[in-house]
Length: 71
Image (cartoon, rainbow, N blue to C red):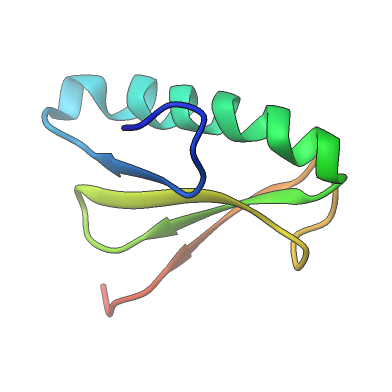
């Protein structure tokens, strides 16, 4: 994960770090989201691959997750 550069790409290496890795990415995105008054969109590309970004489509102070592939 590259800190401070959105969108952030998160590749989960271990189930034990899943929550911590996503929380860290969302915390980085929150700084930019607050400045832009936008929400945060977490996109799940697979069980281990995510992107985290700000979005005008997501209400301010809200984080949502979406899937890009069939589950």
